[in-house]
Length: 335
Image 1 (cartoon, helix red, strand yellow):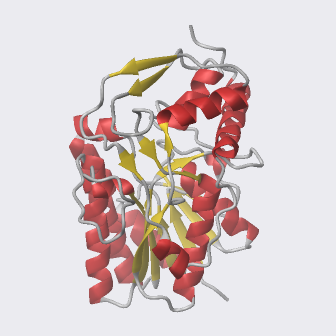
Image 2 (image 1 turned 135 degrees about the vertical axis):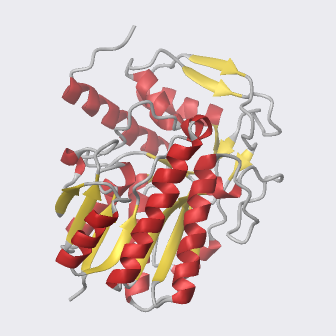
Image 3 (image 1 turned 180 degrees about the vertical axis):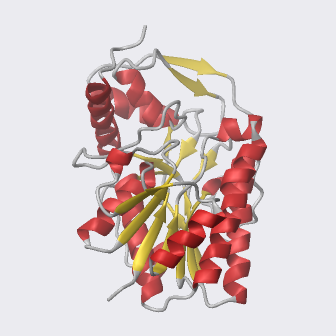
């Protein structure tokens, strides 16, 4: 019988989708979330414990009460511009809290650890080739650095103990649960498809396009968008891999191809049925022209086949979720 799984940040966007799939597999799950950005109603399975991942006393109590075999660590701040303006918040929550969690895991003899990381660890690559996992890391913001520091701590702990891990570096996560039960509920989100969907339903007035003079076919940045349900499935595949004796590894999570900002807007207009308001702005510092995942390693390592590799489908689930949120919260379109 597989042991218990602790999911930190399991009430958040990606974590809740993973918890949903764990529930479908009838796994024994404990969720730790402080609900600062997550939502209790998004937890569809398991036992929710409200608290902070960096709380050493709470972690000690939690691990003593539950026979935790695997930790899936999602809890983190994720807003890149905020990390630039308030870096210590990100090093505190994303890095220091992860250090406390890893210490608790080590003391409790946890066997497996799956870490939610990011393509922001690569920084702004100079060429447009897909980012391979062996590419030098050079994050350009505190968010990316905070995640890279956590990766390094995890790597070093695994080298010194019997802990095995999988680090999953996400590219641009988008979309929502196709069944419409959970989704991206973060306020003031900066993810392109999320923001575009909010414009479509009237929650925001317009969508800003930052940079139209990139060396790309239409002048806008190209990104690798992965549906959150496929990303969640990759975590369960990583879990199966570790439980079967797999060695520690680092894997990109993307589809291996990208869409430009203009192509995303075209998709939103197509699915929404009418054009959204767009304004063009200058480039943002540090935004690379193209950021696409090299995906050979994940396909060669995990038993994982994406099911939602379709931009219109990603946009459709995003739009449907925004409409659901609007009904739940009784929001009227903002002026």
